[in-house]
Length: 115
Image (cartoon, rainbow, N blue to C red; front, side, top):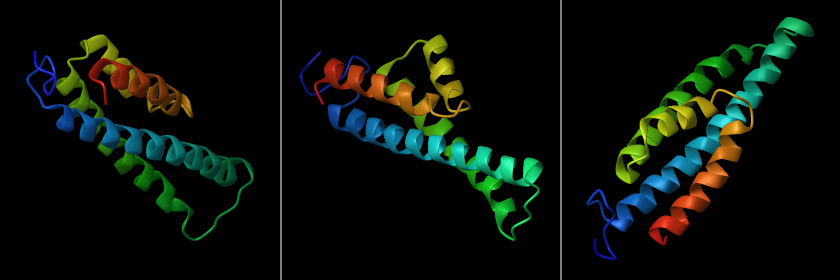
């Protein structure tokens, strides 16, 4: 293994980009999930019917789908075990957990690959 390549034969620059994309989507998913929870409280408990409140769920769904794709891409590049990959993918379904997991995984990957 050279200094410019990972064990998977992928360049460090490619891993750096994959980690950046993962971080952005983990935060976006976490924030949209919190917004979705607030939307559900407003809609079903407070009984507020704002005109564009219905847009929150589809936007969160697409952001989470992008998170799944980006995270799976990163998992392949850094060769995460399947159990760890599934756990990180599911972390995006719990408010704030995806952001917390992102912090620790990013720190571990930065140490592991020197990025």
